[in-house]
Image (tube, rainbow, N blue to C red):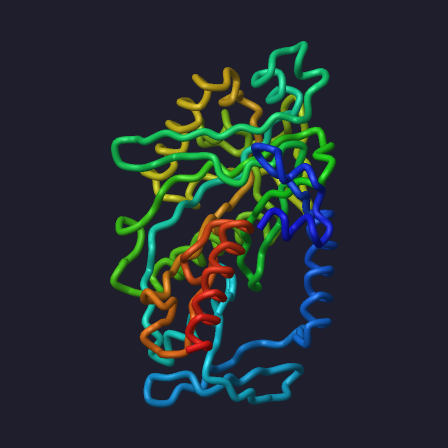
Length: 350
């Protein structure tokens, strides 16, 4: 997969770096190059087009229905690779209404946490090496008595991003450009959730839970990214100003009190995790660490079951990648796509 990324424009050092990094600014060009290669091979990409319905007859795919600017189109096919991403909630609901088997799954929620990148680099490398080495990443994890707390999607020299995808709801993410040259580091510090927060027997239960968190985050600051300093979060009081550094975001933001988005149990697990990580990176739980809410899209909230041929019980339907619940990032989703394609090719040749 890394060789494929390089072929289409990613930096060559991802082939040998222990933690390969393309950068959001470079990745957009890579995706464009891959799209053009698909088109050169006879493929077609339809922008601003929604999958509105799968045509199913006798538990087998017979086609799809799409919608573009109010115009409905039908495409006949006996095989559909469904690689929809983990935020395609309208599609999840449509699949559920059509009887496609799916399950709610456990995932994790929390906040984006910002620190000065120089602080992280010095803590990881030491003062002398930090002056010459690239911006330092970190990976942290704590297995508590009831919940797992861990860092996710760490972005050295990066930005917090408003990644909302529905009206009236708010979710954040993180990104780094190739140069990783912003003054802040950020990552999601997240807490595992599941049966205690929603009914795992309800296939859409985890999505409903995600939406409830994102609604609370949106309402806090009328759609601006709600933020709070860690010490104020612990003290349960609204933040009024930043400390020794300011937030770097893509999207408007406002200081507030983030308490109440999550249950007290999740809040306490988050605080416990931050203090535990402080033993690994001294100062990680610094009072002026900036929290941004809400990180709710760590992985897909559903899984679409498939068999050894990578098909759903709806034959001809191939659930694939992160949205289907079988990957957790760009590279793992690409690898799952290759596996599905190989399985489909083998079946088609029989």
